[in-house]
Image 1 (tube, rainbow, N blue to C red):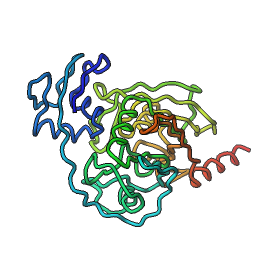
Image 2 (image 1 turned 180 degrees about the vertical axis):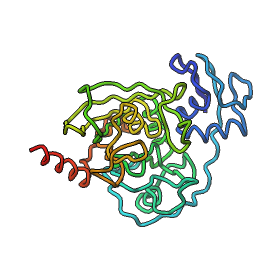
Image 3 (image 1 turned 120 degrees about the vertical axis):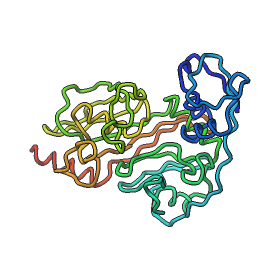
Length: 302
């Protein structure tokens, strides 16, 4: 593939740029650049952290996908939409999206997808076939899955360029001071606990918009929209405001009302159809356990 840096790409890392253009994960691009190199303005370079200038031309050969070895498993999943190019899944609480070094069980969403869908994109290799973006284990709701490489590149680019919209509903601890606002705070790996993310000076820019939907005194129901897609972004930004997501013990959320993980739901997804460009909107209701918590709070206030 050949890509030219635009004005909006100035200062962007080479591996980030190539990740956005190719649909591959940043780590896969970084490994490929450092192993086999990339032609940058006709010169073979092996440094993935080079900062781009406008007009820089990168010629990159994506690595061949590894043979698929992850096992299919007959695990029920809620398929909201499916066509020849992509599918939209309503992910259940407690389901891990894909295997990782820290999680090797064959009960992930990927295992279920391999059983349920005929095809998945080969981008991102054996561990993450079809996976364009992720949801945390205990976050519920909509996730889009690519069924071929062209669809994957289109969907990944939409997310990278922020033309796809991802809207969440969360119950948070405490009472928000403002009815709406924007959180613009960089996120990186926590310096105190490497298993967690945190707002860190010099981290990657992270932007989240929020709007209060309902107040319960010591809890607030909030609508969040991601402008960027950093790991644990809503959970980290909520905690940064001293309003962690309820049930999110990792980031300081109260578990008095709910002990099953964070009450965070990806309820609305908007994207352009990879084949036709038509704007598509998908929605799914809050899960039953989330609704039960809200009903308890509403009864308490009567």
